[in-house]
Length: 178
Picture 1 (cartoon, one colour):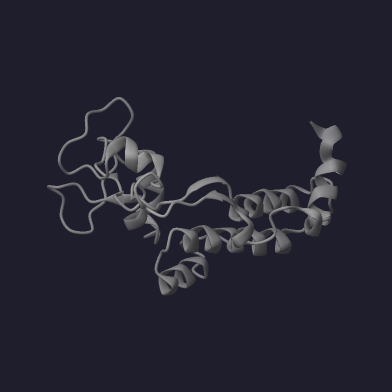
Picture 2: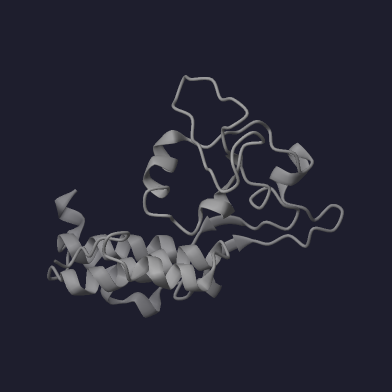
């Protein structure tokens, strides 16, 4: 709705008035992993993967750029080669090489994310890239986009060196300011 651009711009330019100004401010439900304080996904599946497989749509994006979140999002299929992530297309059957949703995401103390700082950074990057209620600024958009990707990868405990390499490689994470 184009009539909302000014309101969007106001939200972005008055960021300090927001409730979420850092990764630590993210709206997250934390669990200790102790009995009766476990992530509901863990409790539902008792730590076992419910045969939820990696989507080919996602793996086809992540694999070519060696996204550092791959081993955090997915476990290699039981018959796949080490480090070989394989997604399955919609309405197709998975096999024993197909990657499954990772045990990392299903662990007892995995937090439940309602709204994260990095999600807001992605929104803010889009606001500046499109000039929604603010002057279009692709440099600011690029910085926010890289920060959002970095914060998302950090949240999922990806390797810090791999994160730095990823966000600084224009072949893996294109520069939107160009």
